Image (cartoon, rainbow, N blue to C red):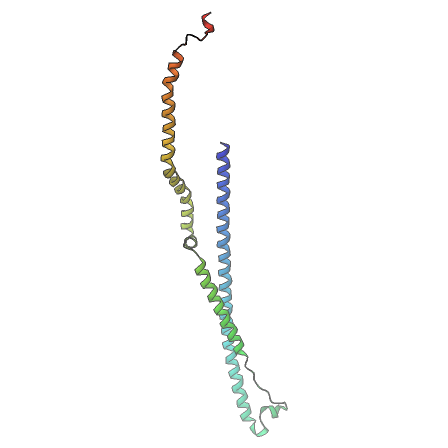
Length: 189
C-alpha cells in the first residue's frame, strides 16, 4: 500500500511538473509573439512617420525654391534674411535602413519560431479543447496499453502460481491423514 501511495505521488509530481513546463513554454511563446507583434506595429508606425516626414521635407524644399525665385532680385532667400546659405541634409536613408533591418529580424524570428516547433507542440498550441481532450485521455490510454501489454504475462504467472498451490492441496491432505508409526502422538497416552 505504501509503495502504491509513493508511486501515485511521484506520478502526480511528474505530471504537475510536465504541465508546468508546457504551460511556461506556452506563456513564453505567447510573450515572444506579443513582443514581435508590438515591434511590427512600431516598425509600421515609424514607416508611416517617415513617409510623412519625406512629404513635409518635399513641401519645405518646394517652398524654399519658390522663395528663392521670388527673392532672386535680392540674391535669394539667404541674402534676404541676412544669413549664410543653408542646406538640407536628408538623413532619412538611415531610418529606412534601420526599418529594413528591423523588418528582416522580425521575419527571421518568425521563421525560427515556426521551424523550432515540433508537431506535438503545434497540437498543443492549435486548440485549447484539443489539448484538454488529449491530456484527459493520455493517462487512461497509457494505462490500457500497459495492461494489454503486460496483462497476459501477469495472468499466466498468476494461473501458474494458483495451479501449483492447488496441486499441493492433495499432498497436504494426504500427509495429514497418513500417520507414521515411528512418530510419538501425545494424545494416545
